[in-house]
Length: 71
Figure (spheres, one colour):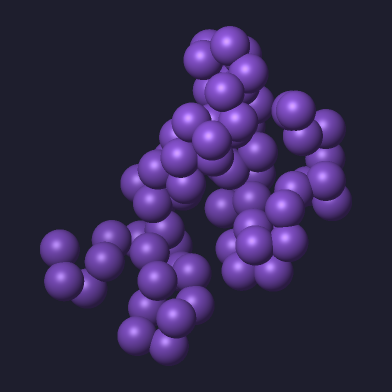
């Protein structure tokens, strides 16, 4: 189901992503939810893909904005 607020996001998102990345995730998930006829698994994959366009995990395992060091 679509997420109305960031507080509704899964713990795996809320506990790991910075606020802006959570916004990206929520908007991408909600859009994919509609586009792919409520396919929850696909919507999550799309949302993570959208986050990874602007964020990456650093060497400490934290999500940070910008391109990956190894790209």
